[in-house]
Image 1 (cartoon, rainbow, N blue to C red):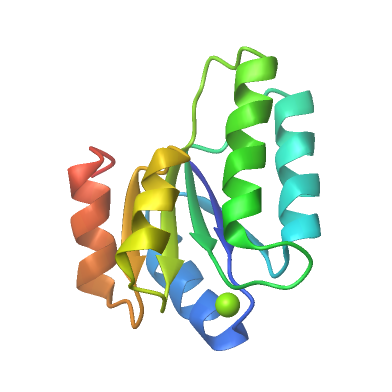
Image 2: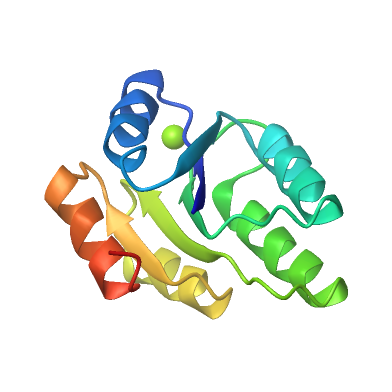
Length: 128
Ligand SMILES: [Mg+2]
């Protein structure tokens, strides 16, 4: 599977990449603009991401904006593959979490995120 990791903390990004590379090809982005560019390219080439980890607090546009942009693009282009999107954040207030689900994320992980947290989500989403 193809996995996109959007995370501006380099250490966290590396750790996630190390864990997730056992399950698929990982691409990383550290800001909102780059994430959307990568996603647009993947849609242009029908080289869809199956799974996206999306940090909420990132430079050049936040994760919520990226999430709603992805869902709008998928709808507009009538994509056959809809990415499963896992939000990641240290924000754990209910409004932020409810907002993320209303923008159609699939899961929400509160930081710090362990390997077990990631593997549990992969299982829940039927990737492993
Ligand atoms: Mg961040």
